[in-house]
Image 1: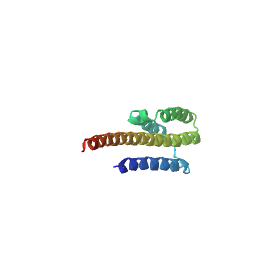
Image 2 (image 1 turned 180 degrees about the vertical axis):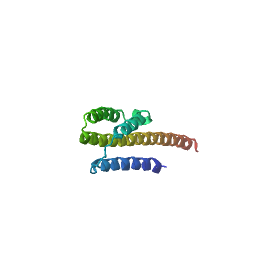
Image 3 (image 1 turned 135 degrees about the vertical axis):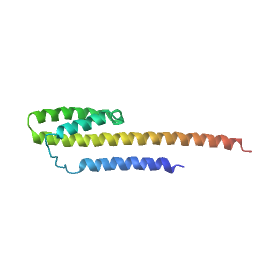
Length: 131
C-alpha cells in the first residue's frame, strides 16, 4: 500500500533531476525571423491563460519581463539579444510547465498520504473491535 506514494515521489524526483539536466544542456541556436517574436508572444499568452500560470507565478514574472526585453531587442534590430531572450523564454516556459506538473504530483502524493492515514485509523478501529 505504501508503494503508490513512493512511486509518485520517485516520479517527482526524476522529473526534478531531468529538469536539472535540461537546464545544464548546451544552448540551442534559435533562428530569428520576422514572426519569431509574435509566435513567442502567442506561446506566452497560452501559458498565461493556463493552469501553469497559477502554479508557477515566479517563472511567469520572469517570462513576462524577458518578453518585454525581447520586444525591445526586436524593435532595435538586435537579433542576437532577441535570440538569446527567445531561448530563455522557451526554457522558462518549460520550467513553468514542469513546476506545474510537480505541483500536481505533490498534491496527488499528499492526497494518497491522507488516504493511507485514514485507512490506518480505520484498521486500528477494526482491530480494537476484535475480541
